[in-house]
Image (cartoon, rainbow, N blue to C red; front, side, top):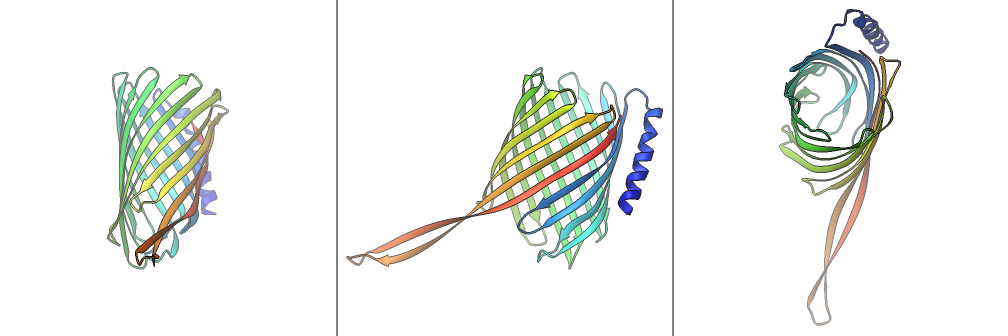
Length: 290
Protein backbone atom coordinates (compact mmCIF):
# COMPACT_ATOMS: atom_id res chain seq x y z
CA UNK A 1 0.00 0.00 0.00
CA UNK A 2 2.89 2.39 0.79
CA UNK A 3 4.29 1.82 -2.71
CA UNK A 4 0.98 2.67 -4.38
CA UNK A 5 0.51 5.88 -2.40
CA UNK A 6 4.07 7.02 -3.03
CA UNK A 7 3.94 6.33 -6.78
CA UNK A 8 0.55 8.08 -7.08
CA UNK A 9 1.83 11.22 -5.35
CA UNK A 10 5.03 11.34 -7.41
CA UNK A 11 3.22 10.86 -10.72
CA UNK A 12 0.53 13.46 -9.97
CA UNK A 13 3.21 15.94 -8.92
CA UNK A 14 5.28 15.24 -12.02
CA UNK A 15 2.35 15.64 -14.41
CA UNK A 16 2.02 19.23 -13.24
CA UNK A 17 5.68 20.11 -13.84
CA UNK A 18 5.73 20.61 -17.64
CA UNK A 19 3.20 23.43 -17.35
CA UNK A 20 5.70 25.38 -15.24
CA UNK A 21 8.80 24.36 -17.21
CA UNK A 22 11.07 27.04 -18.60
CA UNK A 23 14.07 26.92 -20.90
CA UNK A 24 16.81 24.80 -19.37
CA UNK A 25 14.62 23.21 -16.70
CA UNK A 26 14.23 19.43 -16.81
CA UNK A 27 12.83 16.74 -14.56
CA UNK A 28 11.92 13.09 -14.21
CA UNK A 29 10.07 10.83 -11.82
CA UNK A 30 9.52 7.11 -11.84
CA UNK A 31 9.78 3.71 -10.26
CA UNK A 32 12.51 1.05 -10.40
CA UNK A 33 12.48 -2.61 -9.33
CA UNK A 34 15.91 -4.08 -8.57
CA UNK A 35 16.70 -7.74 -7.96
CA UNK A 36 19.89 -9.66 -7.20
CA UNK A 37 20.78 -13.19 -6.22
CA UNK A 38 24.06 -14.83 -5.24
CA UNK A 39 25.30 -17.58 -2.91
CA UNK A 40 24.73 -15.47 0.22
CA UNK A 41 21.83 -13.05 -0.31
CA UNK A 42 18.76 -12.96 -2.53
CA UNK A 43 16.75 -9.75 -2.58
CA UNK A 44 14.27 -7.61 -4.44
CA UNK A 45 13.73 -3.98 -3.54
CA UNK A 46 12.01 -0.92 -4.98
CA UNK A 47 13.22 2.60 -5.77
CA UNK A 48 10.69 5.36 -6.48
CA UNK A 49 12.61 8.46 -7.53
CA UNK A 50 12.30 12.07 -8.62
CA UNK A 51 14.85 14.47 -10.10
CA UNK A 52 14.70 18.11 -11.19
CA UNK A 53 17.43 20.35 -12.54
CA UNK A 54 18.50 23.25 -14.68
CA UNK A 55 20.98 23.06 -17.57
CA UNK A 56 22.71 26.09 -19.09
CA UNK A 57 25.67 26.81 -21.31
CA UNK A 58 28.24 26.42 -18.55
CA UNK A 59 26.44 24.63 -15.71
CA UNK A 60 24.06 21.78 -15.02
CA UNK A 61 22.70 21.51 -11.48
CA UNK A 62 20.10 19.06 -10.20
CA UNK A 63 18.52 17.71 -7.02
CA UNK A 64 17.18 14.19 -6.61
CA UNK A 65 15.37 11.95 -4.15
CA UNK A 66 15.30 8.14 -4.01
CA UNK A 67 13.25 5.96 -1.68
CA UNK A 68 14.68 2.47 -1.06
CA UNK A 69 11.92 0.04 -0.08
CA UNK A 70 12.50 -3.50 1.27
CA UNK A 71 16.29 -3.24 0.89
CA UNK A 72 18.15 -6.15 2.51
CA UNK A 73 21.08 -5.77 4.92
CA UNK A 74 23.01 -8.59 6.59
CA UNK A 75 24.87 -9.12 9.86
CA UNK A 76 28.12 -10.98 10.49
CA UNK A 77 26.39 -14.37 10.17
CA UNK A 78 24.52 -13.46 6.96
CA UNK A 79 21.19 -13.11 8.73
CA UNK A 80 18.93 -10.86 6.66
CA UNK A 81 16.72 -7.88 7.48
CA UNK A 82 14.64 -5.68 5.18
CA UNK A 83 14.77 -1.93 5.77
CA UNK A 84 13.54 1.28 4.11
CA UNK A 85 15.85 4.17 3.25
CA UNK A 86 15.72 7.80 2.07
CA UNK A 87 18.35 9.24 -0.30
CA UNK A 88 18.31 12.95 -1.16
CA UNK A 89 21.18 14.17 -3.31
CA UNK A 90 22.59 16.91 -5.52
CA UNK A 91 24.79 16.95 -8.64
CA UNK A 92 26.74 19.69 -10.42
CA UNK A 93 28.35 19.62 -13.86
CA UNK A 94 30.63 22.34 -15.23
CA UNK A 95 31.15 22.63 -18.99
CA UNK A 96 34.62 23.97 -19.76
CA UNK A 97 34.26 24.56 -23.49
CA UNK A 98 32.88 22.17 -26.07
CA UNK A 99 35.12 19.25 -25.12
CA UNK A 100 35.63 19.12 -21.35
CA UNK A 101 33.03 18.60 -18.61
CA UNK A 102 33.62 18.02 -14.89
CA UNK A 103 30.89 16.78 -12.57
CA UNK A 104 30.47 15.90 -8.90
CA UNK A 105 27.70 14.65 -6.67
CA UNK A 106 26.76 13.99 -3.07
CA UNK A 107 23.91 12.06 -1.47
CA UNK A 108 22.98 11.18 2.10
CA UNK A 109 21.25 7.88 2.83
CA UNK A 110 19.41 7.18 6.08
CA UNK A 111 16.65 4.96 7.39
CA UNK A 112 15.70 2.12 9.69
CA UNK A 113 18.24 0.06 11.66
CA UNK A 114 20.06 3.39 12.25
CA UNK A 115 21.35 3.16 8.69
CA UNK A 116 23.47 6.13 7.57
CA UNK A 117 25.69 6.53 4.51
CA UNK A 118 27.49 9.38 2.76
CA UNK A 119 28.15 8.95 -0.95
CA UNK A 120 30.48 11.13 -3.05
CA UNK A 121 31.10 10.84 -6.80
CA UNK A 122 33.04 12.65 -9.52
CA UNK A 123 33.61 12.35 -13.26
CA UNK A 124 35.66 13.99 -16.01
CA UNK A 125 34.65 13.62 -19.67
CA UNK A 126 36.52 14.59 -22.83
CA UNK A 127 34.02 14.64 -25.70
CA UNK A 128 35.70 14.66 -29.09
CA UNK A 129 33.91 14.35 -32.41
CA UNK A 130 33.80 10.54 -32.50
CA UNK A 131 35.68 9.52 -29.33
CA UNK A 132 34.73 10.04 -25.70
CA UNK A 133 37.22 9.57 -22.87
CA UNK A 134 36.01 9.53 -19.28
CA UNK A 135 37.33 8.88 -15.77
CA UNK A 136 35.18 8.55 -12.66
CA UNK A 137 35.41 7.72 -8.99
CA UNK A 138 33.03 7.25 -6.06
CA UNK A 139 33.21 6.70 -2.30
CA UNK A 140 30.50 5.51 0.09
CA UNK A 141 30.83 5.18 3.86
CA UNK A 142 28.09 3.06 5.52
CA UNK A 143 27.06 2.26 9.09
CA UNK A 144 24.00 0.47 10.50
CA UNK A 145 22.85 -1.60 13.49
CA UNK A 146 22.02 -5.29 13.07
CA UNK A 147 23.13 -7.63 15.88
CA UNK A 148 25.91 -5.14 16.52
CA UNK A 149 27.31 -2.18 14.62
CA UNK A 150 28.20 -2.89 10.98
CA UNK A 151 30.62 -0.49 9.28
CA UNK A 152 32.08 -0.59 5.78
CA UNK A 153 33.31 1.70 3.03
CA UNK A 154 33.25 1.23 -0.73
CA UNK A 155 35.57 2.99 -3.20
CA UNK A 156 35.64 2.79 -6.99
CA UNK A 157 37.84 4.31 -9.70
CA UNK A 158 37.68 3.66 -13.40
CA UNK A 159 37.93 4.91 -16.93
CA UNK A 160 36.32 4.33 -20.30
CA UNK A 161 36.95 5.05 -23.97
CA UNK A 162 33.98 5.08 -26.35
CA UNK A 163 34.15 5.11 -30.16
CA UNK A 164 31.25 6.20 -32.38
CA UNK A 165 31.46 3.94 -35.44
CA UNK A 166 28.25 5.27 -37.01
CA UNK A 167 25.35 7.43 -35.85
CA UNK A 168 23.62 4.30 -34.58
CA UNK A 169 26.49 2.12 -33.35
CA UNK A 170 29.36 2.58 -30.89
CA UNK A 171 31.67 0.40 -28.85
CA UNK A 172 33.51 1.03 -25.62
CA UNK A 173 36.31 -0.35 -23.45
CA UNK A 174 36.54 0.29 -19.73
CA UNK A 175 38.45 -0.53 -16.55
CA UNK A 176 37.14 -0.58 -12.96
CA UNK A 177 38.92 -0.84 -9.61
CA UNK A 178 36.82 -1.62 -6.52
CA UNK A 179 37.81 -1.63 -2.85
CA UNK A 180 35.55 -2.58 0.04
CA UNK A 181 36.80 -2.08 3.59
CA UNK A 182 34.76 -4.26 5.95
CA UNK A 183 35.79 -2.32 9.05
CA UNK A 184 33.70 -4.40 11.43
CA UNK A 185 35.53 -7.58 10.42
CA UNK A 186 38.98 -6.13 9.70
CA UNK A 187 38.90 -7.35 6.10
CA UNK A 188 39.70 -5.45 2.88
CA UNK A 189 38.47 -6.77 -0.46
CA UNK A 190 39.63 -5.47 -3.85
CA UNK A 191 38.77 -6.31 -7.45
CA UNK A 192 40.07 -5.30 -10.88
CA UNK A 193 37.91 -5.78 -13.96
CA UNK A 194 37.74 -4.81 -17.62
CA UNK A 195 34.71 -4.53 -19.88
CA UNK A 196 34.07 -4.43 -23.63
CA UNK A 197 30.65 -3.21 -24.70
CA UNK A 198 28.49 -1.96 -27.54
CA UNK A 199 25.55 0.43 -27.92
CA UNK A 200 23.11 0.01 -30.81
CA UNK A 201 20.32 2.40 -31.78
CA UNK A 202 18.25 0.83 -34.60
CA UNK A 203 15.71 3.65 -34.45
CA UNK A 204 15.26 7.03 -32.82
CA UNK A 205 14.77 6.88 -29.01
CA UNK A 206 15.52 3.13 -28.85
CA UNK A 207 18.86 1.90 -27.52
CA UNK A 208 20.27 -1.57 -26.91
CA UNK A 209 23.48 -2.20 -24.99
CA UNK A 210 25.54 -5.25 -24.14
CA UNK A 211 28.95 -6.19 -22.88
CA UNK A 212 31.31 -8.78 -21.45
CA UNK A 213 33.44 -8.32 -18.35
CA UNK A 214 36.40 -10.21 -16.94
CA UNK A 215 38.01 -9.70 -13.55
CA UNK A 216 40.08 -10.99 -10.66
CA UNK A 217 39.83 -10.13 -6.97
CA UNK A 218 42.08 -10.12 -3.91
CA UNK A 219 41.00 -13.68 -3.05
CA UNK A 220 42.37 -14.84 -6.43
CA UNK A 221 38.85 -15.55 -7.67
CA UNK A 222 38.38 -15.00 -11.39
CA UNK A 223 35.04 -13.89 -12.81
CA UNK A 224 33.29 -13.46 -16.14
CA UNK A 225 30.05 -11.56 -16.73
CA UNK A 226 27.61 -10.76 -19.50
CA UNK A 227 25.26 -7.77 -19.40
CA UNK A 228 22.46 -6.56 -21.65
CA UNK A 229 19.80 -3.88 -21.53
CA UNK A 230 17.59 -1.46 -23.42
CA UNK A 231 16.10 2.02 -23.14
CA UNK A 232 12.98 3.18 -25.01
CA UNK A 233 11.30 6.60 -25.01
CA UNK A 234 7.60 6.71 -25.85
CA UNK A 235 4.94 9.41 -26.31
CA UNK A 236 7.42 12.28 -25.78
CA UNK A 237 7.49 11.95 -21.96
CA UNK A 238 7.58 8.23 -21.11
CA UNK A 239 10.73 6.12 -20.76
CA UNK A 240 11.06 2.36 -20.24
CA UNK A 241 14.35 0.63 -19.44
CA UNK A 242 15.69 -2.69 -18.23
CA UNK A 243 19.11 -4.24 -17.60
CA UNK A 244 20.41 -7.68 -16.61
CA UNK A 245 23.83 -9.09 -15.67
CA UNK A 246 24.88 -12.75 -15.39
CA UNK A 247 28.11 -13.36 -13.46
CA UNK A 248 30.13 -16.53 -12.96
CA UNK A 249 32.93 -16.73 -10.39
CA UNK A 250 35.55 -19.44 -10.66
CA UNK A 251 36.95 -20.50 -7.27
CA UNK A 252 40.03 -22.69 -7.50
CA UNK A 253 41.40 -24.76 -4.64
CA UNK A 254 44.34 -27.12 -4.57
CA UNK A 255 45.39 -30.13 -2.54
CA UNK A 256 48.67 -32.03 -2.53
CA UNK A 257 49.71 -35.51 -1.50
CA UNK A 258 53.13 -37.08 -1.07
CA UNK A 259 54.07 -40.66 -1.89
CA UNK A 260 57.31 -42.63 -1.91
CA UNK A 261 58.85 -43.67 -5.22
CA UNK A 262 60.62 -46.92 -6.12
CA UNK A 263 63.98 -45.70 -4.84
CA UNK A 264 62.66 -44.02 -1.73
CA UNK A 265 62.28 -40.58 -3.28
CA UNK A 266 59.30 -38.42 -2.37
CA UNK A 267 56.78 -37.66 -5.11
CA UNK A 268 54.34 -34.79 -4.56
CA UNK A 269 51.12 -34.71 -6.55
CA UNK A 270 48.99 -31.55 -6.68
CA UNK A 271 45.31 -31.60 -7.63
CA UNK A 272 43.39 -28.45 -8.46
CA UNK A 273 39.60 -28.21 -8.47
CA UNK A 274 37.44 -25.30 -9.60
CA UNK A 275 33.96 -24.48 -8.35
CA UNK A 276 31.65 -22.07 -10.14
CA UNK A 277 29.30 -19.70 -8.32
CA UNK A 278 26.56 -17.93 -10.27
CA UNK A 279 24.92 -14.59 -9.48
CA UNK A 280 22.21 -12.53 -11.17
CA UNK A 281 21.39 -8.82 -10.97
CA UNK A 282 18.90 -6.73 -12.90
CA UNK A 283 16.41 -3.90 -12.83
CA UNK A 284 13.28 -2.67 -14.61
CA UNK A 285 12.25 0.99 -14.59
CA UNK A 286 9.49 3.24 -15.89
CA UNK A 287 9.70 7.03 -15.69
CA UNK A 288 8.15 10.25 -16.93
CA UNK A 289 10.44 13.05 -18.05
CA UNK A 290 10.49 16.48 -19.64
